[in-house]
Length: 370
Image (tube, rainbow, N blue to C red):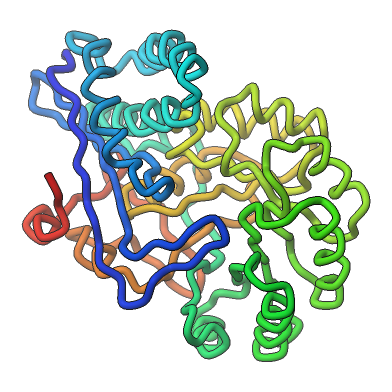
């Protein structure tokens, strides 16, 4: 079997209300799938992160057209070999051009697609290719609460089985405190709250806000300061009783090794669509396990990357809980012929070969862009 083509499938979904994060606002949701085609007609599907910056999809198109030249004619089942073949030149170019993360995000999407191919060839779900005894159901937390009525949305989610909710903060300090206070009062003490600041503050402001938020007993406070300030993150993690979460913007095993060595977070958050795909994700999970820290994977994309995340977690150890985007995004409902089963706050890991999902291409066409 040989690789004959690698394609980007760019998608945009409209939104009923803009998604505001401290790092920027999404007026519509971008998604970028990656297809790896073979001479035997088997097509692997992956996903690469494109939420920010707003021109990420344009960058991915150009990058992928060049990257695929490295892969044409290769055996897609040699995943580790292909990963190294991509990583060696691309990371060097990324460092030269100041875009290392973008390069690794492309590698991530291709890697997921290669695992999908391997699973289809072996007639096994990805998680069973990695583990002899993968988990079948995984606990979820909800992110993407309504910006216009977060309290009302939170009240609706708890009876659905979501006993952990993530709130977006990092805008106005007083409004941030009010949001956490109001949601805490609405859902009670038995629901765990995560607050994600998306790198909004400097060290002093982060320390002040974390102290003020202590009374609301956060499960963790996510990315309170710029995430590559590992010394600052380490100081915060050591000084605060509240756990610090970070890692969604760490690229590859080496960056997680530095985070672990610095103890820059209490909960580490690798994202398989950003940090090197499933291949690198397995190594990162082993590293985190050996450190004694827990992890909770970040993922904020489509159902393709969500399925990849479920397989990754099902086959590894040490995961606290899995992120689930419950935002009102029309594309989510139209994407799969058979939706990933979610019940009472748990997701069932897809059981079919590879990722175990099948796209509804006829419905996706209205979201597709050139």
